[in-house]
Image (cartoon, rainbow, N blue to C red; front, side, top):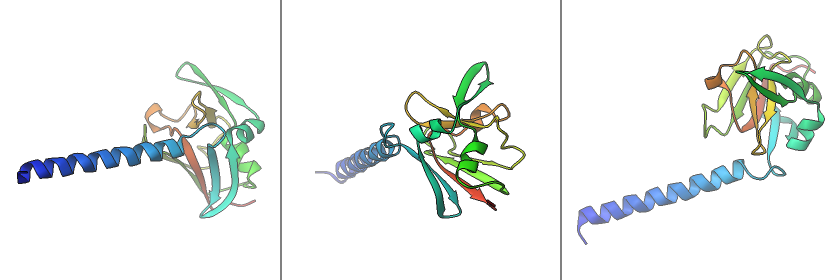
Length: 150
């Protein structure tokens, strides 16, 4: 076999391996509703873990964003249920597959109108009237609180 053809086959093999790994990672992060969870952390300490059912049990807020009704528990309610009464900032991280995968909010930005909208796919996205469409985070995985006080 020629060197060029060998390199092409090796490159193709590497691409296939990367695709398989990416598909596995996406399936792991975005698994069935019963396996999907969001962690609330204070630094690296896990304060709480929520399945979709546990999130929905916290109560549902309804807001309208760009003419579409979104519904789910508010960020503040999730934080309070996790033992957080005040904080300096909160970083919400997602899978980053379909968006930037991170948004940072101050207490002033984290009003009761910022909610975790439960998507039909069984994951959640963070939305709010003051969060630009391109800044929202889908497939949320972690809510990291800095300066938490309970």
